[in-house]
Image (cartoon, rainbow, N blue to C red; front, side, top):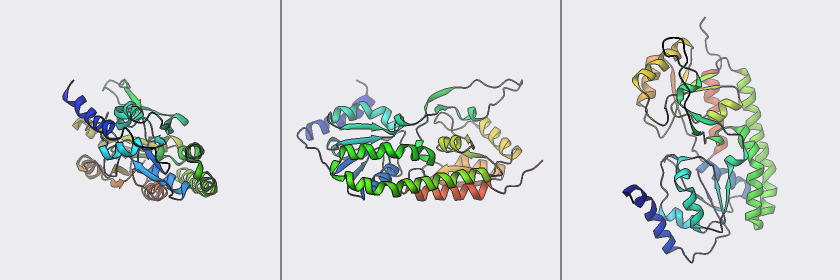
Length: 305
C-alpha cells in the first residue's frame, strides 16, 4: 500500500474503532459544503445540527475530512452531497461504509449536469492555421449551487429528503418551505431580468465556478484555470488579447485562490478584478452580491466597433 492510500485510510480506521457503538443522532445531518447548511437552516428553522464536510476557506477539490467530521458523519441519518466534488470522488465510497444505515442524497442526481472541459473549450482556440484545437473533456462540473435556476429545481428534493429522514421536523419544514421557495424564485427572476438587460455577456473567471449560472442565463464564462492547473504564459497572453479585442470588462476570482495570474490579466487587459465567494454560507446574500457585480461590470459597458 502506498503512503497516500495509507494516509487516506488512517482517519477511517480511527473512526471505525472509536465509533463502532455510536448511535444515530436524530438532530444531525451531514452535507458537503456550507451553502447547503443555509438551505437546511432555512427549512428547519435551524433545528438541525449541520456537519459541513468542507469547511470555509478549504478547497472542495482536495479537502480531507477530519476525524471529528467523520465521527459526526457516523451519527448522521442523512448525508446530502453535491456530487462530483473532488473530495466526494475520493471519499464517497468510504463515507457510505462508515455508516451503513445513513441515507445518501446527491443533489447532482436531480438536475441536468454539464461535462467539465478545458478552459479553452468555452471559445475554440485556433492552431495558427485556421483549424480549431481539439476539445478535451474531463468529468462533470460540480458547481450546481451557483445557479438560482438549478437551486429552484432542487429545493423540492431537499425538502422531501429532509422530511423523510427527520419526521419530527416535517411540519416545520412544510411551514418554512413556501418562504424559501419564494426567495429562490425571486432571485431566479431577478437574474433572468438582469441577464436580459446586459450589454456584455462575457466574463473571465479564474476557476470555472459559474458554469451553470452562465448556461442558465445566457452568459459566456471564460476560465483561466485549465484542468485545475495554472495557465501557461501562452494561454494567459491569449486571454489578455481576447479581453482587449472583445471588450470583456471583468475577471472574477474566488477568495481562496492566488491573485497573481488574475492581477496580471486585470492589469494587462485593463479590466476589473472582482473577488467572489461561492462557498459563503448565506446563499441569497452571495447571489445578490454576485448579481450586483455582474450588473456593475457587464451592463452599460462601452462596446468598441
